Image (cartoon, rainbow, N blue to C red; front, side, top):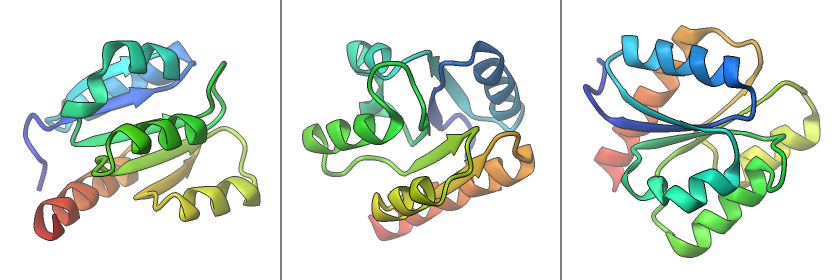
Length: 129
């Protein structure tokens, strides 16, 4: 069941990817804000209101993993994070698991899988605090 209007934050340096994910998630009933870099997200301070974060691993400047670490320092009760990458590397999968990621997707990924992973992550956060 979609989480109507839940705010999702997407950080990806690929404008086409941001646009595609934004369209997909809005069609699924989410409220979506996209950023082209970790630094842009930090400047906007938008992660505090997010129900879920979707972070590209390979970003210019801070990587998705570095961004996640920085966000955790300022907000230990960070919302669920889903990592996405164009490079399916075992080290990235291990880092995502170690970070407690709610999901890990290699581009291109099925939109339906992303939506269901977001819904599950939000459900788990609501029910387990």
